[in-house]
Length: 372
Image 1 (tube, rainbow, N blue to C red):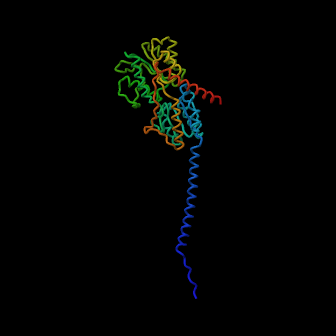
Image 2 (image 1 turned 90 degrees about the vertical axis):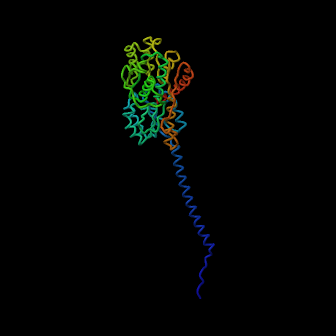
């Protein structure tokens, strides 16, 4: 008699298949959860990593004390270390060496006020293949930078040009004292003044064409004359000599304009020595204490103030967010505008109160780091 074949209950078979599939799904789910936990840990680690970001100025100028005031707060709030660097002589070669050092140290981002953008751009683009960069104050517009943070130097130059029409309503000659004319901020400020006095249609950004640095440039159909643009190559000790020489060379001059932060104190010192405050007008860019005091005392018409505190805040925040894969909120045109302020006798007290606080904080930071 043959043994009867065993019968498989379809229900038992389906139940076995279901259990097998359940075990497989459970195992896959465990693997997926583990993978997600690993990815999450990596992302959290990246977000929590203490970054190193460099902030490189265009020289050791008092102007950057305002930026230094932002450093300690940013380091704490963003969990970063900031290398605040001021090239001793304000040269492009020094900036290049500082950048190379920061790249070698593993910097996660570099912010810089570019001294010589035309010649520096190829080098900067090479660096940006490894380390993201943001420009502030003085741009390298043809580079691959993430953003430019600052006021429109051209628009502020237009503001200064309009001020010239108020200071010299009947026309006259004026001179500009500046560090160098190969820095983008100097190019744009000067050109903004020239275009405003020539009555060109207003534009917020530099149109890209620079008037050559020639003497005796007739503006406004000859109503005003840019007698000279004197440069000192970033050497602060030469600024006063340039101002003194200009005073002697152009006795008909009615106005002097300090275009870099240290230019105005040099002009004021030269005017004081020559006892010309009552005869000659002056105005300047940036917020050196000597210039602000001159505005308050009536010895300067205006200071066209930047906000280097915000330059530091905005530039460093963009780089920190970029390094952590977060949204940078940079506009499509990559221009992060920090508007300029025209400081006159009407608003000097309020503006200077804020600046004094920043100066005190920044000075304390710089002294502390210098002692280390």
